Amino acid sequence: MKTPLLAFNTNGIYCEKADVYLDPWRQVKNAIITHGHADHSRSGHQNYITHHTNVPIIKHRLGEINVTGKDWNETFVINNVKFSLHPAGHIIGSAQVRVEHQGEVWVFTGDYKTEDDGVCVPYEVVKCHTFITENTFGLPAFKWLPQAEVMADINNWWAENKANGQTSVLFGYTLGKAQRLLKYLDTDIGKIYTHGAVENMTNVLRPMVDFPPTTRITLETKREDILGNIVLAPPSAHGTTWLRKMTPFVTGSASGWMAFRGARRRRAIDKGFVLSDHCDWQGLLESIKATSAEKIICTHGYSDVFSKYLREIGYDARTEHTQYEGDEADTKAEAENVDQIE
Image (tube, rainbow, N blue to C red; front, side, top):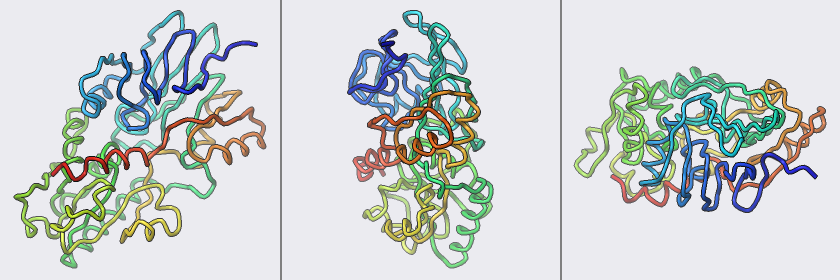
């Protein structure tokens, strides 16, 4: 039986011919990393390869590592296997990995979205025979509105809160979501304040993107300075003593999960904004069709439902278990550090 070009084992997604793993979840010798979120870029590997814009991100998160940066569409060969990185459109530095050997082509998406958010390099369709796709929001119920509409809603919410004498506290993941929000906040309304974790990551990314100015909240920051302005913070800051300085405040959360009825209430959030860094149902289907892939492997998210649907419409589709956790992984990582950063 022919050995597949990429196989799933206890360490991660493995290319045996090149002795390289893609986003491994256990420590390995050689790792190609799609992006900087905690479930895809883990510590302890001997050698890292990633897109060069992701290098400062994973160094910020993992410390000093042996990492090589590559350009978009740059082919690099390991043991006669050709690899290249292509934009995934998920967050800054996020890549798909194209793997080719003897005319056979596989693509691993990592996490991806098809809407151009104006912050990261837009998603690129890569033709292949086998397509490994995430399914974080792989249900028909998930259908995103255009980003411009959501950001207009957020800015209107901020203006209303200011008129009511309240501070707006907007929660978004430290890497990716926070910067996407920051890029389009209307500074004519007021000033943008940040939690230390958001500020630290944004400073890593400022050389790559023109962001509005922000002010870090410190022990010296006065409540009256913040009043009526907006605060960007990680979800893990919600419910902590750190928020006391914002009183009186109104909370908002920007996430694809806000599409679920009751999600805002369960998370004790005043206002939910549906804004995701992943594909919705239609985005997943359109991406798969555009690749012309014959085989589809579904990983994290609603993989069972999504792969079943793909089989019903004629694809050779199956699921594979991974240890990718999607957005929840970054929430856990942030929760471990949120009280230590001011």
